[in-house]
Image (cartoon, rainbow over all chains, first blue to last red; front, side, top):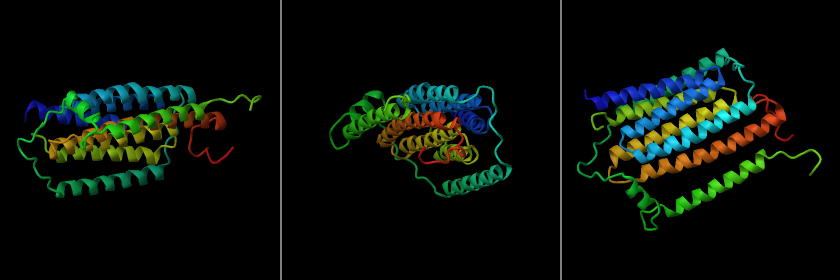
Length: 173
Length: 104
């Protein structure tokens, strides 16, 4: 058992434990912080897979963007220091059993399906230069059109946020 | 990296997906439900990256899907938080049980 394998299992345990705490903690702010740790662990998993660019995007967008946005909205909407109500016992029981059964079924399927080993020697570099070239190329393998579509989508989402959250004063219409 | 089989990474992402599902089922606060959705999206990202890395090492498609999912998740989180803040202004609560009117 080499160090790389140990790093993978430690990272996985970290991700799962902090994710579980994020969905069960009864203080909203702590829950957000546990989510932050879980997302950082996933970025570490991407580093472990030698995907530095995806790991950097994960840290910048998720950890630096979405979690900060969630914490802001917690401060805007929540009375500080108030615990969340405990979930109903029957609901917690039935969702836990549904989730356990679903996990068991899925892992059984994964275990039974023998994944073929990858062909040896077909390794390409997944460096940032390769990703950038393919992302913006207009050839058959390129992703220029989805890139442009997603930029329009981000613009539309930004305008939509302003329209939804804008406050209309009672006097003006 | 090659010493860990693909199935173990898939187990991790499956467990993360069902943790997110558990949060989505039990929580009734909109912000925590949004956090559960983020966990689910992240488990899908792990799947895409792992499949790309292990089964198709010569391609980059899974990686691009991951990038696009991250971008769409950011847009989705921003819109969701705008809706949550708007609901809070109208109902003084972000519990889904309290938001029981379509138009106010």
